[in-house]
Image 1 (cartoon, rainbow, N blue to C red):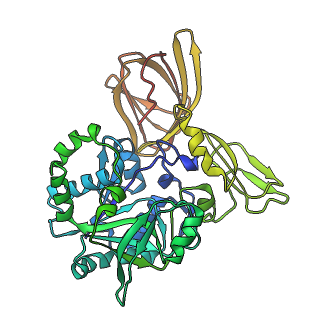
Image 2: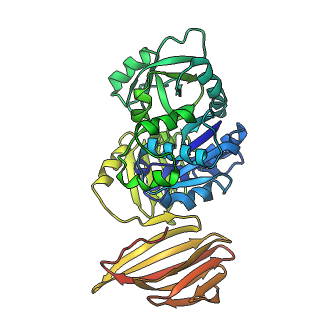
Image 3: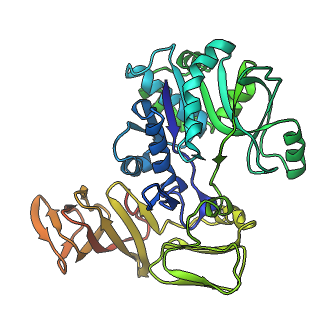
Length: 439
């Protein structure tokens, strides 16, 4: 069996810690077994390995997050990139075609599609080993994994199962996507399950589905069509249309930590980062990614979150409204993580027809910014700390604390970090030039 982990989503509900570049799965906030902290994707990787599923895992990420995904998975699994975000079905299809064309999977093999940012107990992944036998025993074309609801949530989709009899699985009667609270109560009374977003099927099933859609079975040809694809979810494109689907019930823990109330409930400490909570402040959390203290005094039931992207102070039950607020704005990201480290936009200043960008760069030891050409801007680099090497127009130079390097338009330049390296970049460019910071 092969597990395809999907790394989609923009994480707007966990703003300002997550955004277009750093999705929620990369936030290292969850308590780890060694007493430290781990990200959602790091936790999933650990659980995959523990369940014996790591050797056959494949991650599918947007191309802007390829390096970051490889970094957080420690380059232990294959990672392929999508040129555009076109929904869970399209990402799953790309993963399936990659496995097929590379000779890693045969048409009769079982594929399991799962989100890379789920939060579950270890026993959840043990269920994956049962999918092949259930497909054979049930003669179904699709196996889903559902879990017993703990409360009538309007944030999750529901699976309504039929009579399971004495078996471990049940036929799927219907689906209900994010009902209101009153309808959720009715669904729970009907023994409905939360939809965990797990889909298992034979590779031949996906190949046949793509053939019916008139789509190619070669990854390169499929990828060329990406710009014209609509956004398709696996639920709507496949699961809800299937008449031969069954669901396996998981009795343990499963959560989608996609909101501040669900995420803070899993944190080991009420304060992460600089700051403190004082007075009568029950069920309040601080998650502070800034280098300045953030204090909350006498306010209960809120989350106070800070990052270079901004500051959020919200009641936990109302914090999801930030997603709608952000959709009304079109600001450029101020912070991003990459395979080589991270960057923070410190200042944007207009000087006549030119834009002056001041950016802090942090490079991880042994990583580098590959050589590129300064086509639309000039820049200066000031080395704040660490040691490395600058390559300017093919000539190397030592990069040490206090060093200053000037890069003119047209110059080829790159930098490699021998140790953790911090530098300030001052970039001068035209207002109409493309302002992508780094990727």
